[in-house]
Image: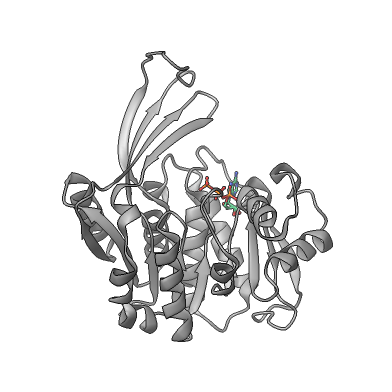
Length: 319
Ligand code: ATP
């Protein structure tokens, strides 16, 4: 049985680094690389490298992509439990220009076929975990089922509400003890669920009290962690459940790092956050956030997402 269970997506990413992004009708040359991706897989790798005994629940096709996922999970030392699908394994086609801007097309494939029935079959696994982590690159009903099973068993639930345009519902948000949107996802959730319009670029500059009030409008109870990229993190708790913290809201500044590629920084943050919670569930929440912030910062010092996850655990950190 694992301390952390991640339910989510796996993609084979195909990446072309080009001088400029291709215009419609254009054919251009770029430097090609391929590797693993998908928010679920990246977060499972991060949780494992941050020290958690981890199981990743996903859906894979019977193809080279599926074999890649299984091989890499074995290499990194976590358990992979996959629903076998007739659809191909998920793929991502990514163009990155010289300025680091990207254009991405996702072929969800098997990820879109991860079924409620398969997740229900993992009930014992989910109930025995210390933390269950999900994202929204899989069918929302399936994700809701996973959170529901974990919640019923009293397991801590974390929802990384990403990507921003994925469907979500208030009932889904209520099943999470902690939600972890980035600025864009936070703005999208506010717009969708409370009719509050806010420019994602303005989120980091808001004062703490205003940001806290927005978090409370979004979820009456529960914790919201808004990741703010190079600015760091903002945390807002429901005042009745401070999770060991002294204050209902606070900011933690980003690590000073030489960032060369921030792809997957959010995934690094989420995986490390749940690993830290599973390692010491009674520690103040701010300690988990500080650890995740350091881990995510370090992940930006290498190119790539899953492959760039560092190896260090809460035991390597000063208390
Ligand atoms: P991505 O979509 O690229 O995976 P994201 O948009 O979901 O990332 P961000 O908010 O950009 O997530 O970053 C997540 C966390 O990673 C931040 O809260 C911070 O802890 C860390 N981080 C990101 N960028 C930097 C940076 N330039 N320097 C230091 N830490 C960073």
